[in-house]
Length: 203
Image 1: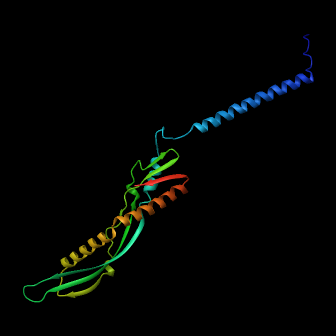
Image 2 (image 1 turned 90 degrees about the horizontal axis):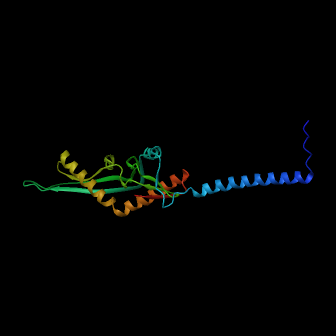
Image 3 (image 1 turned 180 degrees about the vertical axis):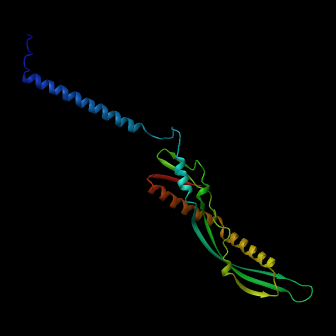
């Protein structure tokens, strides 16, 4: 019959529990430091490659399509005069109304338009353009003065002249800049609402 182990004394039990507690504390500390260190080492700084957003996210933005950022209402008075060899001259004057909408077509966004640069989402937008080239409201066109008979070809020439004048008046650098500023603000707000803290929007 093998002799049984003598019972541990209280001081030995105390030392045993203290040693076990110390070991457990060390293990917890090592695990905690390892996790913390791992988190601190995850970064996308200037030394790391830029990360392109998933194609699905780019397509979801493209699906928005056209986005208007500036509306300009314009009216133009256009006339035409023709001299005749026999008889009096004839003249026609008409007033045209148009609504020009400046914005961007997000369906034309490039594949690499959304890129993470560090902790910042870099967004490259398509250029601001005239969203609809049929901006003259023909229903509101008014004849101001008309003398003599004018065929359809002459009226189409007046329409083209009014269209050209509206573009010259409205598609200015200042108006395009206003539309760009509005686009930067609105697009940045959209991505911030999606959870991106830092967003850099440009064209």
